Length: 239
Length: 292
Image (cartoon, rainbow over all chains, first blue to last red; front, side):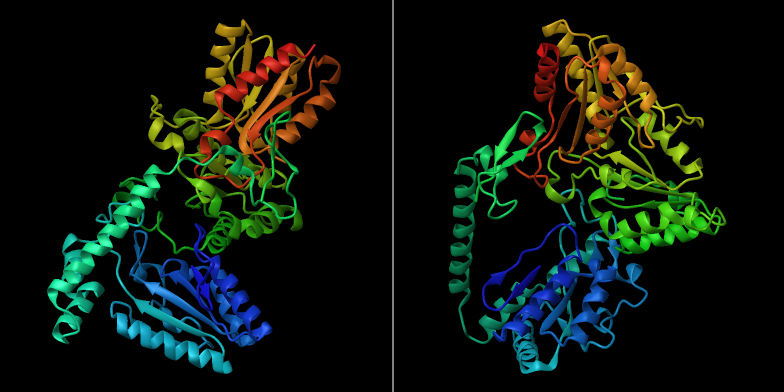
């Protein structure tokens, strides 16, 4: 996943690691345009071993681009633990000439303050940073992965009990008297309603028409024919 | 692997010979080429064929050209690359691709696609034993769907040999992998509904392909269609169509037809509309038969 500036999300995709050189490029674009924006390129501990990630680090360092390379280390690349995938599992050091920093991804305040500090540092023209944000994945990697064949249930429960970030914030807020349990419960209810409403909307929305299959493949090609599925059938490219 | 391809056998017998790697396709293939060049039989798995592209340079510029550029002084013939391939129902852009056309364009590589468990075993063993670098694409939808009585002993199915899976006299249908099953169904439908007798050919080896078998069939029927999931433009069907019109021109009663995926990225929600399904194929049979 890559984001830059405020509210500019470039999304993620199935080819993990591919977004990292792109993130370096986006950061370069911002530096070139002088718009003061930075890019945060996120990838997991699995993708952290892809070759193109290291090419991106090198390019970013050479051209001093404001890219925050962030490895979200949840300790498992699908079913392979981080220590089995990397000869050097200290992912924040993998940037070599790019300075690295490790932080606790389960602490929301730490993440906020760290991000502010590092992005300010990058905006000042100091070049890229590699961050390793330590976190955890409760469920499996995908619907095909139960998530229990490569680790114990006890391990998952332990993290849930002692390190869950939302639980941590709740305790902080209640102990610091920023909110009462009742207020937090109400907040929970509001969140649940937002999710339920969104689910309902999604389920009840009509299916897209098939001509939408032919949009946005190119730009400025609207009206042109999209071939397939046989030599006599065409779709029409639309915006 | 994600489809439990290796089961538990590797833990029992040979953890030093069957092992996981990090997420690093270019490295995996380069590593495999090296191991093969040093004399080991190397079988490199890429989790999904959609992920093979970081290794494209290694396959095209290294593996394919190794023997040629060294004047046969060294080679990586002991390399086989395996990858799950093709549509699976919910794979979307990056878990559904059929990239055989990119590799078939590279002399030096062999590309093989089985249509089921019996062919998978025989063809994979042939690839492993073959002294050229081979890419073995496995239709992933068949991992859980297909069940056959596979002989326990060792057997091989020869490479570069197409198989006539159903004999017929009126239309030649050429496909590989999952689509062969679609074509067999269409052949039954064509017989019932149109009284048309279709010959279904499983190409099996995409490169180098068995032109003799398909040419002989098309000279017999006079009508040909090639079907594949990959997009129409520049899919491997284009090569076959060019070849057939060149070699069988005077025998053809209709232009060679191709039924394929659309020229779009493989869509998520539109998968049923994207694939060359039995209705599109049957429609093409009708077009062929009605042409004259």
